[in-house]
Amino acid sequence: MIKRLHVLFIFCLLAGYLSAQHSETDLPRYLSEWEKTQPITPGQESELGFTAPPSVPVRTMAEWEELQALVITWRSQPAILTEIVRAARAECRVIVSCNDQATVSLAQSTLTGAGVDISSNVTFLVVPNNSIWVRDYGPNCVYANSVDSLYFVDWKYNRLTRPKDDTLPSSIAEHLGVPLFTTTLAPDDLINTGGNFMSDGMGTAFASELILSENEPGNEYNVTAKTESDINNILFDYMGINRYIKMEKLPYDGIHHIDMHMKLLDEETVLVGQYPEGVADGPQIEANIQYVLSNFQSSFGTPYKVIRIPMPPDGGQYPNSGGDYRTYANAVFVNKTVLVPFYQQQYDTTAQRIWEEALPGYNIVGINCNSIIPSLGAIHCITKEIGVDDPLRIVHKPVEYVFVGPNDPWKCPIVADVQHRSGIAQVVVKYRRETEPVWQTLPLNPVNNTDSVRFWKGEIPNQPAYYGKMFYYIEAFANNGKSLARPLPGPDGPWDFPVILDVSATDEAPEARLLDIYPNPARAITLIPVSTDSKTKGSIHIYNTLGQQLATIFNGEFPAGQSNYFVDAARFAPGAYFVQLQTNGRSVLKKLLIR
Image 1 (cartoon, rainbow, N blue to C red):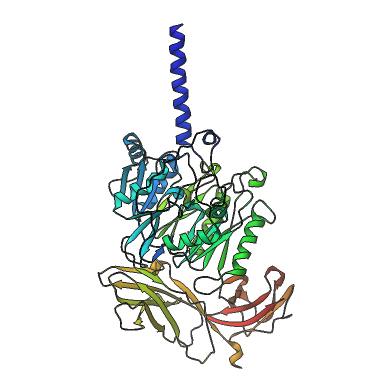
Image 2: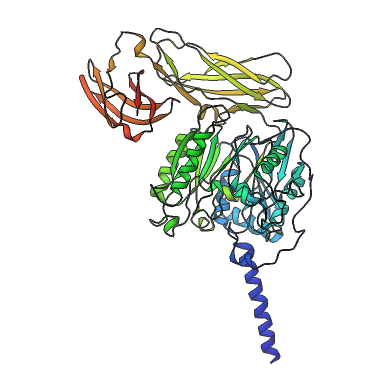
């Protein structure tokens, strides 16, 4: 009998241990069934740090800004974490949060066994934690006075059964010596998660309406009830957010975090996941994006640019029919590298191409996420970026296009907002024609001569008789010797704009002629006639009024004489467009109206 009791006792201990291991190691991003049975006791969260907002204006960092570190939590998913460390350590320091020294040893042996060099740029910290989802509970980076001291902001975490997770921001703050501001005490006690927050670095942020429901009267987190205005005020006080755009929650995304289907690529470009028409969250995603496009402009005062990327199926199934919530939008910037979740080669190749076209010059690294996506998260969800201590900030609205007559000189104005806490010594524009390999240097001039100068301007000079693409990037030098380019990859990933010949300004006919488009205005099939004196290679493209190329109608050899090409105008939203004919380095353009 005693022996049986002993065996039963050991069995119970083992079962309890395995249950705890399962709950602690494999917690999904959503609230697990196990957690729903656990009691919640008050006072589990860390209340270290300042509980009042910063006394100076602050600016929330954009994710594409320069990083000093990337934080991960080592629990489950060692294969994915290994590939994150492998790629990220080449760009910045990787801080690996481990629950205990045994986990440190396990992480180190796993990484070295996979051939990852951990002798530099990898730091292991013993930090209590419950789950891998550091995006949701990690610190949020803001800068005092835009580019001065780095601060951390820690919201109340919406997983009350994971109290260890909620202490990580204070541990990272102490390790890096960064002041921590927390929204833990009324009336500023705010429930929020990092996966449901994106900032453009200029005071605009996006979220789903989860931020409203989790802080409404009668909320399950026992935080002070807040109106939308109350929430906006807290985000302004602690994070400098002066415009907080909120969208409807999605029916099939159980956690309602926007990082599962969208990603800000820069101040005016949004990457958006796209389902087949009428499938899963596709209709609500599209409604949300149209709401944003109809009611808001970018911080530059321009319409947002939208890049669509497929939400790939899982064995032919989507979330509405039992498939996993596969997404390519759940990616993270790590300086000049972007880590993107991958699933299946036939879909991954398309995603790779879209990311590379959207961010030329960046190193796009795909990491297989089939093992983690059933828990409703991927790369972005299990990483948290830490901005540099001394940011050199360059803000510039890229040139869309230059429209010029054949004999007219042209100049392209360049204006940049450049800041560093030590002041700016010099700002230059590097530019070149698409047809020339050598970069030219254009020094920009300060708009005024005060010590606090921020704006620098200049003009890319006339390029006589050149009608084609121009490439350029901006490089800034701070007084303390620091330098930085924007875009971050510099010459490997510059901005570009077309110099377009306005054929309406002259009777001279180029070698290839773009004849009158018919019908114009158009509603359906539309004729684009081209006439050439002799056969020649070239292309026909459709652009919108922002200079974005929307479609290629033809790319190849035009025969001598007149040839006809067609476009279905019904493919495009009503509005004004440009049809561009490009041959032998020359471009001609005609307007197309679509009704």
